[in-house]
Length: 187
Image (cartoon, rainbow, N blue to C red; front, side, top):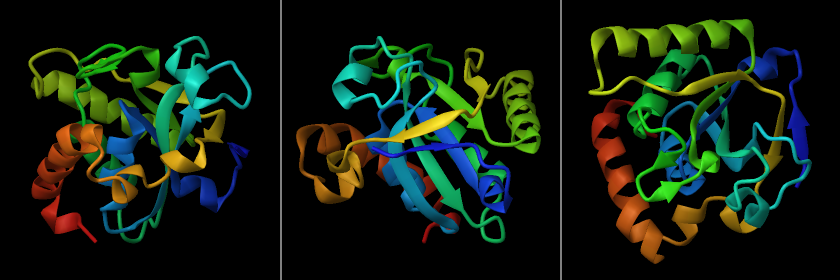
């Protein structure tokens, strides 16, 4: 695993880091969007250097399962990524997504710039003000610090393992629903 830290450059502006439950689901969804150059599964937001999947699953590292998205702002805006993020999971659940329970599955946005911070907070505030969800949006919004790429077998997990039981029961249906909502923005 190679950690990446925040770099103040144009490339940082074209990077987004989101946690929305199991990274297998989130990676598959974001990979399907036009303008997304890559979506890499990994860990962020914790206090343990170079965590392993097993350590993160134990819930003691403070890390969330996240994806780090590299995108072309000319093709897809950060606000469009926020829309995809909020519609890809239930942002009203604390430390869980469906049957996946623990702080590693929390809803979180790690912003890479003051502009991303402002856009994320505004988007969350609008969702809460309009009552878009039946409960308040509890998504954490925090400064990006470091990203640890997950083990190789987690990368493009759904694409490689579509018939794995979790993928066929959970990832596949979520991805199908996501593709219907974002059909105009798919690759």
